[in-house]
Image 1 (cartoon, rainbow, N blue to C red):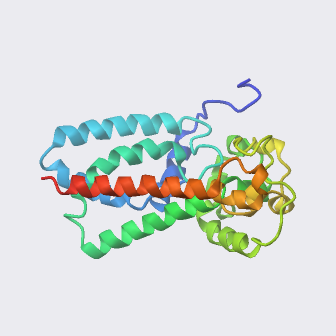
Image 2: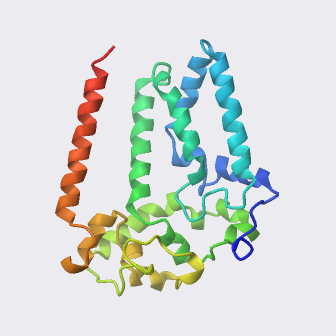
Image 3: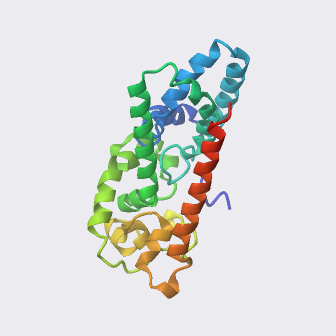
Length: 252
């Protein structure tokens, strides 16, 4: 089965490292600007806990090098460097020390920018751009340098995609999804009709990505979830989470 997919090892980790550092398709800082606060926090922690910082650096370096050796280092059709998500989570341990060293306006600006980028990530399915460009599923095997091309940068094209989704909200798509069922994951690109015409054909590509909300395009009998109950459940979970945060913040 792996032979029909793509090679596992790329043999060019330097390209992957460059792409995850500087490209507009997978650059770390572009897709997670809050990591800058973690870097400042690292510097602050270094003075008091060098063993912790060194251990963290070694673990991250080993993990990033392993990911860079994969042909699919970015994480296939995904928003930014998906496989580096565990690194972001670990580095967030250093974030609290960052604002103590950086200026307040810088911290606020970085956090607002980070939230905006994450909301943009959630708004549109990442497959849309690849389907629109007619890319095969394993394009990165033969042409990994395409990640440096602006035409397949999710970050650059997301504002345009959001505008197009708003403008086409009253248009009815022919199908809801190319997947065999509503709750299935998006199929491999090679099994989907590609090109700009396919965007208008499927609701999951034409509209917004908030799945339970996008079910409004279906009649009530076809929806796998009740939208009103889903909104109520999410609001309750968010409320409980906020209460726990406030309660925890009161403790020394």
